[in-house]
Length: 184
Image (cartoon, rainbow, N blue to C red; front, top):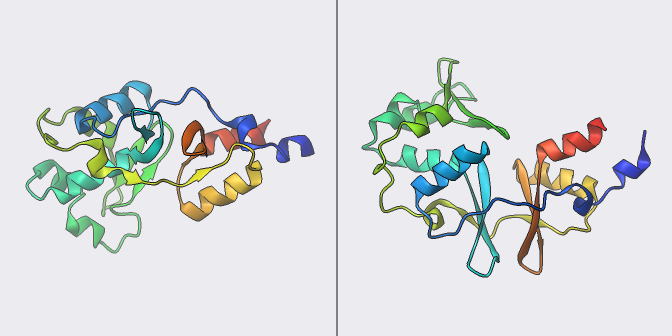
């Protein structure tokens, strides 16, 4: 076992070319950004590049679920009935680097990316990223050991860690990045 790899720091494995979005961007702009880059979430930074939040496809889906007058949300199994179904996966997203699926109460799944692309342009009109983002996201310092990063992802139950130093975004590390280090 390569101890040098195990003792790596977050800085050693983080991606520094981070795709971000401003808090005042529309939900449609967010969906297009995620789709264009084949990702499921991005950090939210203000005009000075300070980290202010994180937003993901899960947040978009949560908004759709909360919009009771959206028939697509009911068809996708995102309504209240789905979240109350006895199947423990029903209504909970299985999210990864390049996909987002919802498992339905009957055990099927819905490819959310395909459905999101076909939504009417004005569906989320009036909503901005800042309305659905998670403010003050969890972040980790660049010099933290990768073992601490992995423990933090498990504790926070997230798929990406934002790397910040003095409130400024420095990079991002996903679960895939950690798996890549272990595989090497």
